[in-house]
Image (tube, rainbow, N blue to C red; front, side, top):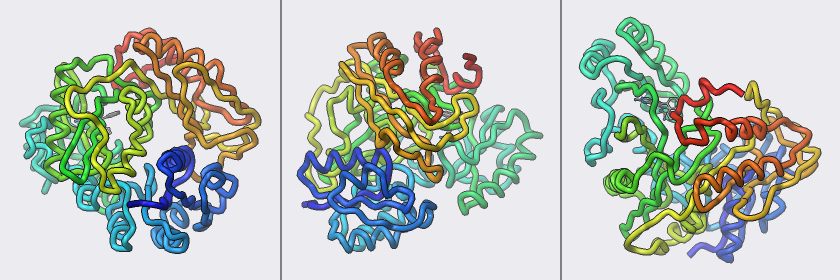
Length: 444
Ligand code: MV4
């Protein structure tokens, strides 16, 4: 069993995990940097340990400091949240070797899925549809030419060790591919420590649809519906929703079966997400994330499952609480990421929050660790709140989103609230008619 959980994270997700622990009757340990002394996750935890200076590398990314904090406080489990060390297989391995329960998948699963070329190969072997492209990493530019000629231009070069949009290159013809190949390799080497790149057919206007999956240590794996995350800018998601306006029950079933097949192939346990590109009624495996995601509340709202509590219980060896048999999504949910940033340039806008008033009422949930007079530090990502709405259908959810964004008062820092209001006034968004390129042409 687990009795004391250290949360190796900060911000809203650290608080989210603490709340789950409290409901399970578990003790909590917050770790924090020197910049986060006044953070809410520190206030709400039973114990807190300062693990280093503001800089992430010296605090939230410092494996030795975090392990030391766990040893000192007697924590018997560590929840990594998202970002920071959440998908670092080395960290998961060390946690396990110290006799501490890592609340997440095995280091092997994290490592396998962290290699995007390998993940693609495993997906193909498991019978999951992938886009036509190279078999594993490319060994020469000539091989890239051969594959591109076979699948047809445009193609996309991706770093094997990349992911989340980093280290990608779209090539419309052979000349572009010639130039991009070496640049992509050297960039990948510098950014990820591996020059491996692979190539696949490029889709011009896909939607980003991801399936929430969950495995327990008794060999059961379930799929908990999809999230449509197509509304994003510069690979930062802005709005996520479930169900997707374009996914039929038949497609949901087929995508879920595909996601489960991949999980079975890697012996997946705990929470995960299988990402797909969706275009012209076909879906293709993109990558798998081996963590709880920022947008997990959207799934919680339509399934009624507390995914974070489930993560802890499954890590403690319990069976999934999800009932067997027919599975349905109930109503509709959307999440709006509220960042402390300039709504036009998207540049981070840290500083003191002078006024902070949360929306409430039916169907409204806000996941945040911010408060009035809180100073948003410049050292970390700019997410200060997630506004989550639930409704009986998409129309009611949108109506709630509009009024909740009107009700939300944040002063002192610029936020993405005005941008969200503008998106909610866009006819195509309201119709559900969009792709991942929506923001490229979005005009306010
Ligand atoms: C693609 C693609 C089109 N075709 N792959 C971006 C994030 C990374 N996970 C992979 N990405 C993409 N891969 C092929 N073959 C388009 C994207 C993409 C994208 C995907 C999901 C959400 C937003 C996106 C924005 C730009 C590009």
